[in-house]
Image (cartoon, rainbow, N blue to C red; front, side, top):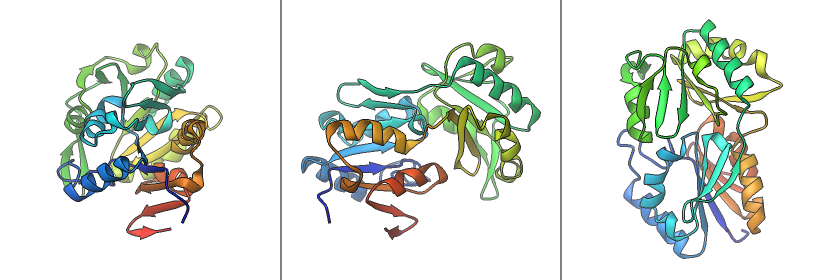
Amino acid sequence: MEKIKAVIMDIDGTLVDGNTQQIPPKTKQALLKVQENGVRLVLASGRPINGMLRLAHELAMNSHNGLCVAYNGSKVFNVQTMDVLFNQTMSVETGKKILHHMKNFNVRPLIVRGDYAYVTNVYDCMVTIHDHEFNIMNHEAHDNHFMLCEVRDLEEFADFELNKILVIGEADYLQEHYQQMYAPFTDTCSAMFSAPFYYEYTDKGIDKVKALDTTLRRVGIEPEEMMSFGDAENDISMIQYARYWYCHGQWH
């Protein structure tokens, strides 16, 4: 085995317990130890920056030059210095066109600016997960440390560049309609599932592997020196990119 220089961790469904949203003690202990041994820790998630910092600090990444890959790869920052190492947003025009197109579907888009998450109706907040009703808006606000804010029309409001558009819907509905939701934008953006009830848009070509390739190679870390952990569609490129990867209980 090559010497591992970077460990890359997805967050939801991988790093944190799905019920408590906390890092299991054994996982935390192991990740603190690898950093003390000189391995660079990278958290890679669809989450925004606000939703990653608590976990990054809990893992002492601010003392070990850890990196956070946010918004499915459209933004990368150094936790210790808070320097932005990579940032690729979609154009205002593309963002508005996506938000306009979403009006044709029974979905709830969510966009982020600063400390706020914007939606059209904060009370349209429930999705079905494992046969139970779940307040997805509360989950987004709590886990990502946002204030929720309503605007009458997201398309009209979004006159700024976006790192990501998150679309929330019932899992069965999204599976049935995601191809029509994405079809007009195949040349201008990327789209993928990060959970059965989350479908996400970023700028064309953006994914976690582009973020890793852009930032880790700058500091001399090659794919064969990386180990990655993930569990969802938005992790596929990342786990295939690294030489060693763990997914759904198996090493590869």
